[in-house]
Image (cartoon, rainbow, N blue to C red; front, side, top):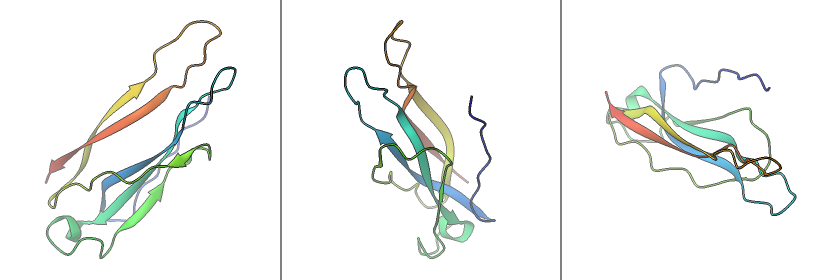
Length: 113
């Protein structure tokens, strides 16, 4: 089992959007992996309280693998809010000798400060 590591954005930044690295289905007798990594967009506290967006935007990336491609970034949380919740989709067990992709999608919620 892979160990999980802690990653964070720069001091006084908040997560405001994300992009997933996903490998598409590979077909019969191939190992599907689903979601393999994630990037988050981080904005400085001043940005999310009304200052011009992206003036201090940063991007952080997880420590997943390189399989698949990153999709577009999600919509950015509205001014005055940041990511505060997560919903995941995991492929259920498909039975013996069937390929289980694991995590296949995520959605994040934004909350106002």
